[in-house]
Amino acid sequence: MNQRKIGILLSYVNIIFQAILGFIYVPILLYYIGKNEYGLYQLIGSLIAYFSIMDFGLTAAVIRFYTKYKALKDRNGMENILAISMYGYLAVTAVCLVIGWLCYVNLDNIFGESMTPQELSEASQMFLLLLFNIAVTLSTMIFRAVINSHERFLFLKGLETIQLILQPVLVILILQKYPTAMAVAVAQTILNVVIISARIYYCFARLHITVKFHYWNHELFSDFRRLAVSVFAVSLIDQVFWKTNQVILGIVQGTAAVAVYSIASLIYMNYMALSTAISGVYLPHITELVAKKRPVQELSILFIQIGRWQYYLLALVATGFIIFGRQFILFWAGEGFTDAYVITLLIILPFTIDLIQNIGLSILQAMNCYGFRAKIYCLTGLLNLILAIPLGIKYGGVGCAFATGVAMLIGNGIIMNWFYSHSIKLDIRKFWWQIGKISAVVLVCLLIGYGIYYGLPFSGKIGFIIKIIIYTIIYGGVIYKLAMNDREKIKIKASIYNFKKNL
Image 1 (cartoon, rainbow, N blue to C red):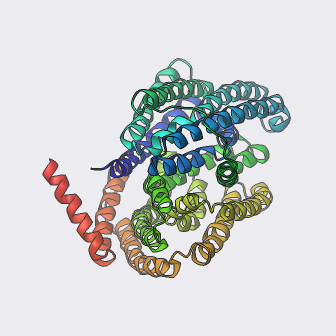
Image 2 (image 1 turned 90 degrees about the horizontal axis):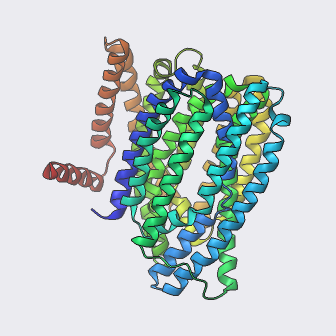
């Protein structure tokens, strides 16, 4: 099994771990620290998340250009791009700390109306700790980019698996004695520093990288900067989509509303991870295809193939949540979180368009054509912000989610599909024809699912789980029989054969 397949497999293992641990972890956090403390933790986490994008797109640019030089076997180019990037990472870390300090001294002004003095004090301490966490992460992101470029996904994703398992264990141990949101932040910071140290050691001890400045190339720097700025702009708007709504709710509604929205956020972020698990490991491969000037038809075929696989999985989760989601949230989070069902649906349904096409983002990065995506994303992010504030004031989390869904449908759905078709020359018409045929089968599965939910005489949590398992099995059988093409069926059969052979 090659590293790319290992990366995809481990990504899904991590998603499963994250989902299972998260769904167990959140009720435990709510039990130990309560709804308001949990909302406080999510609110400060949402605010500090803005600083996580302050690599200004450097990581994507490093992967793109470092992989290009590696494909061309240019050792000096590889060393040089790392040296230039290292200076960039140190600069943006300094900027992050300065902006972070300005935010820290104004926390009272931002949240003074919606928080108690005790909450404000704890929020300030937590903000400083998480700011330190982000600074350490930003200054060392180059090492994660290098491991990604070398496609050493076993180590990269394996570390993430270890972090996923150890973090809740460490948090719960600390909460036994210190049941506060601050304790959760301390545990995360300690583990993050350990993981980062392991990446640094691996780069120098196993990959034998060298960071050395050889020459200044103005054209290279111009291309590097253009891609970095474009990726940064998209990352910034990502925070508008995924974090700003929680900040808005924290200001206009309070920490309880943030807690409800955070429950929905955990679900749709896991939903997003199901798609990025595949596309996330393909950037180095696509960059090599572009560097070697392979025809765009190859990229179009890859775009459709991966989109189909992503849709099979996402449609299972989306239809399953439509059928079982309301009762799931009631079992999982308890009373008082029912709005999270509507919030989640308002986001994941339009978001599915972008997720089944996110291999296109890797294609844009590899071609250094990410600028258009950045411009459109900025406009749709602005639309989201304009709509979310008044809707959030009047309708709370549901209003914010509606604003996000509309903005994503327009920007990520309609406009980006036009760009893929007319500028990149991907076969979007064929893509949607195939997705449309699959959707007809998915609709049949949805109707069957409602029959399972209302028709089977199982009750309670065990009965609920049995219904989900039955629906998943039937969905898989119907999709395999009616939606998959011959090539996909052969891959499924080969995977089953290899699995049995390795038992």
